[in-house]
Length: 308
Image 1 (cartoon, one colour):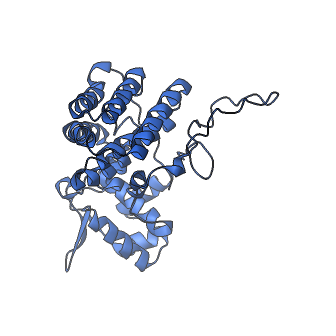
Image 2 (spheres, one colour):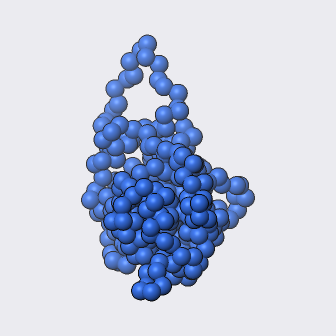
């Protein structure tokens, strides 16, 4: 068995863990928490809620781009092969200039030439490999990778480059998000403003429940919405990157603001500033939010990769 095949076999033995979100099949409820949370007693019915709570699937059209910014690797055998090869390249198991032999890959995974060919094309589009006549397909150096691709963000988040990615994403966010908050103060919509308030409220309840998954999802949508209403299409494009990074990392890798009361308070300050149309205050609150991690000094744990 070749070295490539042995490496693939080793990686395939590790079953990926799920990262299921709490809530119903239609989407995460406004105050739904992870399945491990204690269930409410069934002896006495809970009192009716004073008002209906918005569900995740009722968000404004803008926030749906966070979901669409996720994987572009596809599903089925094709998606699995892209996932495996991508992880191996990003982790360094397949180093730069390493040849990838389609016949060998197809034989190892028992997939057709078409599946292998399409998978390599996806990786080529991400800048991970290059295919040239008389040379074949080879792994490209890190400098050629599309580091803003959501799949590469995910693979780096669970590989040896996780700390580099955390630092780089925090630096990127600290550069663009305060400006986005300032601009958003003049372009706000009532439905978006309400959605931002809902997300901050969800984060507050998730913090009390110790539900990092729900906190992360609300955090990702909050920051993406702020960037999308800034009135700048380039920032709007980057909102998908920030949202994908926060969701895939569960906060620890892609997030600069650590879950805590201070983080929630800063999110609420941003909401208040945006509602008041106060750009400088929104910018200052966002900068403070993204600076919190510098003084906490706590370790952050990388969660297991998600299943798709």
